[in-house]
Image 1 (spheres, rainbow, N blue to C red):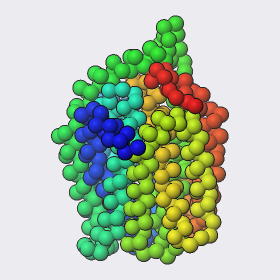
Image 2: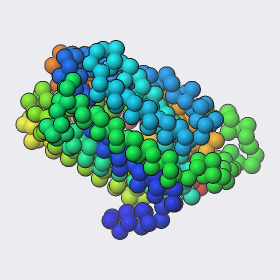
Image 3: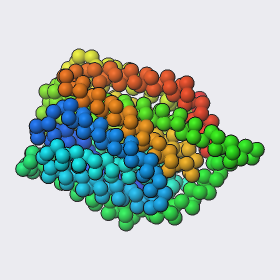
Image 4: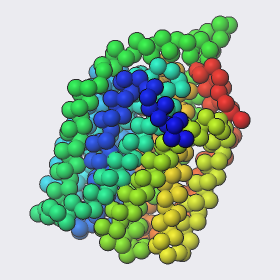
Amino acid sequence: MWNYTYHLVRDLSPGVKRFIATESLFGVAAGIFSLILNLHLLELGFSKDFIGQITSIGALTVGLTSLPAGLIVQRVGRKQMLVSGMLLSVVSLVMFGLGTSKAAIIAAQLIWSFGITAIVNSEIQLIYQYCRSKKEETSAYSLLFAIFTLFTGIGTLLGGYLPNWFHGSTTIYQYAFFVAAGCFAVSALLRAVLLPSSRRASNASEVQAGAGTAGETGESGGAGRKNRHAIYFLLVLSLLIFNSGFTYGLLSPFLNVILKFRFDMNDDAISELLALSGFFFFLGSLVMPYFMEKLGSRKSFVILFVFNIVIVALMAAAMPAASFAVLLMLRGTGFTMLSNLVDSESMSAVAEEDRNLFAGMRTVSRSIGNTIASYWAGFILAANHYALPFILTAAALLLGFIGYAWLVQGALERRLQGTKGTVEVN
């Protein structure tokens, strides 16, 4: 396994290596922010249902702005869009640290959402442009997410200790926002300087896309057949992405709140546990390419859906904190693997010329799911129902699995066969 990973990293394209190397500071900042935001809002006196509303506002904003962002990225370029989004995130983090009113928090959340929109509508397409083959795309995505989750865990750990080291004036979390903003700013600068131009990278991608399109449409069908099926295929994939966003929104943004009130944990313990969970996210991302190569797309989807359904259902049961922590680690690995599989296989199956459009549709679908789930979860937690989000997540995953088997599986495999030439679907 480790030898496989070593060769995987060694053979990556130069642009991919630079992209992954600059992900570390991005991950640290995201980890700090994810831990402290809800705790900061609670200390400012805001209610749990307001926290849910803020989370859902952010997800809704990302969804509403993603399709326009897909048009903008075609004009300004993916690298420029990515760096601009990271700089907007810097502004947002500073505003979160300084603001104390509802209006200031909402404004910071909106700017954060604009930044995230720019990032998610450019980063995967950009790193895929640096890849030399479809196989490298899957590897690049998994390794990128592995580095992100590893350093998100480090950031989460830092987020638990920074308030003890640097006490802010608005809340004890204030200066932690500024540290996260600094990490984002340095990461944006490094990417602006080190990453190859997306326009130069696009030349190789266009050649690759041409080959994929030929295999996908066939000589007799031509562009007409592709156009008839492309939108339907993107819509089918969007249903799968919607489910991924919904199951994320029910739990992931609120794990710190659940740990704080269900198990009466302090901030240090929460940060340590979530940081450890982040390491298991890292392991899940790292093992994903190996898992795919050994089992193939279909078996991987089935196993990971079933695994996640069982684990998250068990987390709803009454248990000691130590037992919950073990399940949290397992859930982190399984959820990361499933999320990576959905995103990487979906984007890889889409032709290069459709990827900007799909990135927008993907973000809209995920944001709608995330918005509904986050808004709902806020009221559930406000009523102190700390087990119910796990039950609902298990049910949503089951529906997602049924949707995958019924609508997505066949179409996805046919497209992967067309774009990759061959695909293992045991």
